[in-house]
Image 1: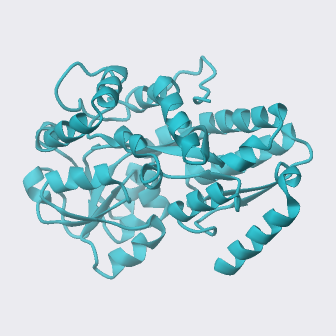
Image 2 (image 1 turned 60 degrees about the vertical axis):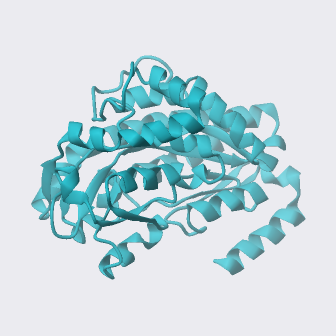
Image 3 (image 1 turned 180 degrees about the vertical axis):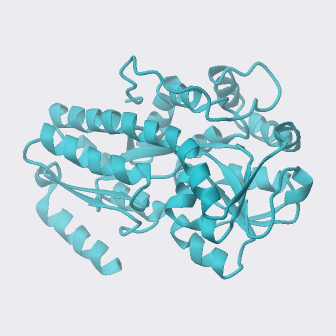
Amino acid sequence: MKALLTALIGATIMAGTAAEAQEVTFGHGANPGNPRFVAAEKWAELFKACSSDATVNVAPSATMGDDAEMLTSAQAGVIQVTANSQGAMSQIVPEVGLLGLPFLFKDLPTAWKVLDGDVGKMIDERSQEAGLKVLGFWDNGIRQVTHVSKNVPEPADIKGMKIRTPPDELRLAIFEALGTSPAPLAFSELPSALQAGVFDGQENPLTNIYSSKIHEITPFITLTNHAYEATPVLAGLSWWEGLDDATKQCALDATAEAGKMQRQLSFEADEKLKPMMEKEGVTFVEADRQAYVDATASVYDTYAERYPDLVKALREAAGQSSGSGEGSSSGEAPQASGDGAPAQ
């Protein structure tokens, strides 16, 4: 992969800004069958149709590196676009991690509405300061806890668990509050780490768990619904600023249109996947939501001190009045009306 990145860097320097609009590498870490994989292919189709002279090379399954490496590559102009992760992005733009406050959003449509409004615009402004342009926000679902040998319906059940999280300070704080021993690891390395016994379990939305076959290693899934995670679609700012206005609009429109499909697929995934996974030997239980809400309330106190205005704005936008999060669920189906365009 290093040789490939070196070659791409050389090609980027030789080609110059004028060619960058025509040669686009879209990197992401999802495997076939994942909504992110499907949407990336759709993005390429839409962008090529809108910008007739463009060639889009979609690089899935972390072939261009893990999420953190792809962000660095986008900043450097090695790749042009990445459908990335909230956790990895939070290392560059810490504010985006606040979307994962425990039990913040009551349902997925509420999360999307918040991202498509002023909060999304604020994250875009901060991202541009870091050399990245937010094209929009796709979905990475509501997260659940999996374990190799037991379910964890009560916070006491999860205490002492060695759990993998994304490289996200806030997610680590959630699981530290629950008394576990969390540690970050790139998602692409997770299955082998679980097989090696490095972790007792992990947390992810069902679609990621299933498409990466993590349920075969950790067949006990507790439906905690403890946090939401977005999939920010990001462009390298140097590439973005070299585009004409029409091509910029092509990229934004492709992100919004592919995002409608991706969000819908993500929304539908839990309902479809649960019976499929049960047939494959998974044991599901519902968590005691209020007990988990109470156990993670201290996380809000910590981050409200650090980001008082943003935490307040997020709570208000999410429909919270006071206290810790109100719990997350799949909620009601998103409506077909409206353009659903992500924040630009």
